[in-house]
Length: 211
Image (cartoon, rainbow, N blue to C red; front, side, top):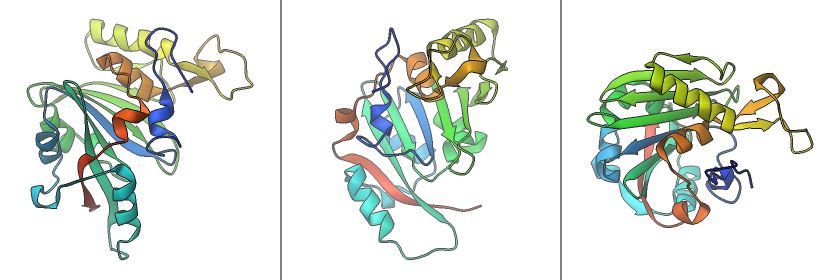
């Protein structure tokens, strides 16, 4: 279990015990939007939506015939007043043309982990516009955002600073470790997802991602 000192954040929910997203993901946290509406804003066809567990969606995905485009799962987990949009092989939540509508009238935070480079990035959207961005290779630099937002994000990156491995000492600065940007996003919105939160039936669909 990986926890932050104050918030009690644990990364188990995206790890092997939870969604098993170690090979990459696109996760968007949005406040005050219902799951079905959030998926609609993400461009998921309403006719394709159904309720199943994440492992059931994974089985369905593996059974799909080879396609010309990338096929993945998009699902919307409800956590109180927030929705956690998870795309295992997708990328819509990181693109302004999709993340903008998702954040319309509210605030959304996207964290993207590349399945090829394993590079992580975080983007904050507010009411349809991009408000701030953090590159995982330079977590101490916040692009955009007002002083208050940038200051808060920097504070949270320090809280999410971890050693490279479990055997390494606690890092003193960014050069000595890595920042878990998914923890930054969850801490920013006050979320502490746990494995039970994502273990039950969830609204989602198999989605075709076109280049």
